[in-house]
Image 1 (cartoon, rainbow, N blue to C red):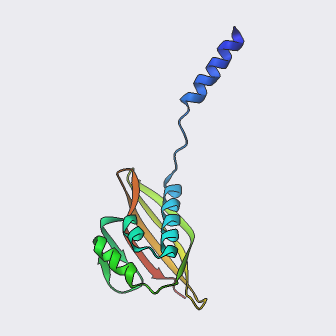
Image 2 (cartoon, rainbow, N blue to C red; image 1 turned 135 degrees about the vertical axis):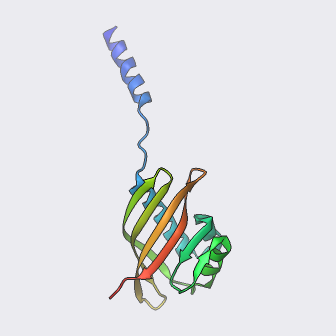
Image 3 (cartoon, rainbow, N blue to C red; image 1 turned 45 degrees about the horizontal axis):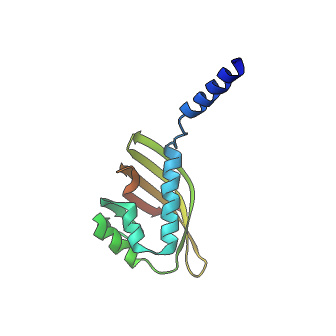
Length: 142
């Protein structure tokens, strides 16, 4: 009888354990990995889907791009064939639905030239999904 109670107690304990939840670093890393994958695919529609409808983007040009159409315009104008590789990053949660992530990425041109960049994303959770609300990229100073 004691063995049965012990087994039932163990089973009850196992079912009561909540699954581990990702923290801000893991959530931000997942968004950055998805961004890298989409960047390398060149699929502009998938890019637009990664951003909020009112997102702000300072990319590799001087212009500020805003909203879904701005995001579409920016990524449509990028030269074909550039590949991105995310590097180290740090992330903090500033609320349950807001993450800030800053880190590095290398962009490799068709000719093999590597352009190191700094990337900062502000991400918000919308309907359970992390989206980029603000994006800033700049070359790493020499």
